[in-house]
Amino acid sequence: MTGIVALYIFMLAAFTGYEIIAKVPVILHTPLMSGSNFVHGIVLVGAMVALGGAVTPLEKIIGFIGVLLAAGNAVGGYVVTERMLEMFKSSGARKVGGGH
Amino acid sequence: MDVMHAPGVASRFLVIDISYFLTAALFIMGLKRMSSPVTARSGILWAGAGMAVATLVSFLYPGMSNFELIIAAIVVGSIIAWWSGKKVAMTDMPQMIALYNGMGGGAAAAIAAVELYRAAFANAVNAPVQHSAVVMTLAVIGGIIGAISFSGSLIAWAKLQGVLNKTVRFGGQKFVNGLLFLGSLVVGFIVVMHHGADPLHVSLIFALALLFGVAMTLPIGGADMPVVISLYNALTGLAVAFEGFVMNNAAMIIAGTVVGSAGTLLTQLMAKAMNRSLANVLFSDFGSGGGGAATAVSGSMKPIEASDVGVMMAFASKVIVVPGYGMAVAQAQHKVWEMCQLLIDRGVTVKFAIHPVAGRMPGHMNVLLAEAGVPYDLISDLDEINAEFETADVALIIGANDVVNPVARTDKSSPIYGMPILNADKAKNVIVIKRGQGAGFSGIENALFFLDNTRMLYGDGQKAAAELVNAIKAVG
Image 1 (cartoon, rainbow over the protein chains, first blue to last red):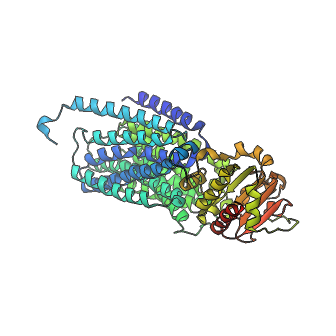
Image 2 (cartoon, rainbow over the protein chains, first blue to last red):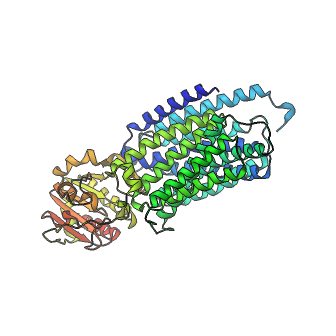
Image 3 (cartoon, helix red, strand yellow):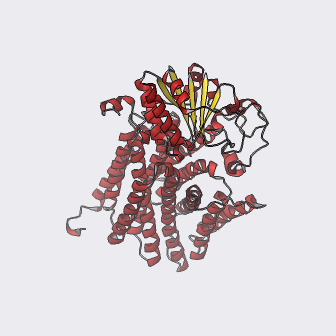
């Protein structure tokens, strides 16, 4: 990947992120923040490759911490987002589900 | 891995590239689905599938070793995060998000550290230069941002969790903070200019950045913390994107950048919902509740009995409930919803009005109501509901205070002047469930409580809601 292509990716991704959030209702701010928190858990793949290429003990230790933290970010972010979104139901769903 | 049967390096990269492409698409579509309550649930599943694909194919990277370390770290990190994520109470969600976010920032900083230390040690023995100056710069910047996000998020977590109650402030604090930040940039510049310089310089970058994260978060009050968490979320995204350039990893660049820009916008929206600018949140002292001069409010608070409120609501045609964080603290949301269901069954129109800053971050109250089983289509935000208060027979305020204080509309000397509020005072009858007669979170007297059409129902939120349930049942 050349530098200029990376720059194009950067620009387009920035606009994409902006557009996705621009019209989101306030009621979803917390889950959405949690969801985007999960998405940057992709740092896990970079940490894996960094640890995979680690040679010296120092590199291995830092790489290990990196993978550990990244896995925590990804898994924790997923679990709490899923838990929150699971609870959002419409009144239609409530009646179908047997009501109160 | 079975080397004999491993596919060639080129085809492995093809598999990895295609998988990362798929991951990026799943992330973007997932986030898009998460922006509507109807599709939100499926959104996180899509994004989760993307993450699973990316993680699995990353094991195929040519030249990887240390597999046992990688798997051990993933297993340990996942188990701890899974357990804590399942266990955390909905009221504590904001600080948990801060914690996971900090971990992501720390991981980005760790990637930077591995690359920078490698360059530094290679430079020390005059080995060939490993990275171009551009890549080194990106590694340094991503590392600094990630480290700030890591230590800052930990402080934010500690403050919201109540582990750390002090709000540390001293003269010249901004100057010291500025020096820490500038210092890490200058040392980073030296490292870039000297192809990694030496391990001591690399360590110094991270030490200064970590200190800066702590120092800049310490003076910010608990009430402003959600905005700060959102900002750190955006910063982690940016750090991940920068390290994505370093690792030549398109999935990281795209996902990190999307989160960076989406998070920045979300931070601005949150600050706006609190009637503050981001700079004001980061650099002012309001968040700790420095209480302004309370304006004298005339009139008196008039108490009412639960049985009377029950009758009033049972024969109303429209009731608007205004919940605040106090309701969640009293764990009253289940009883409140039970009460509302009784009213709905009697043909009363019931709506929930949510102020953007109800709860501990925008949207937090919706999560807490959803937990109690309140359907999201009964919940309206400020812009939707404000015109409806005039047609409501009863506005029931439970655990909310400053967000319904009409002083914000009228009194220019009030610290909350100009903050958008819910126009609960326009309802025909206003019922306020409140523990005692004290002032609100910000220490400002609430003019709403003294209005002619307001009655106070004193008591613990949960107990009062239970009494209302019985009162409505008694109406028959």
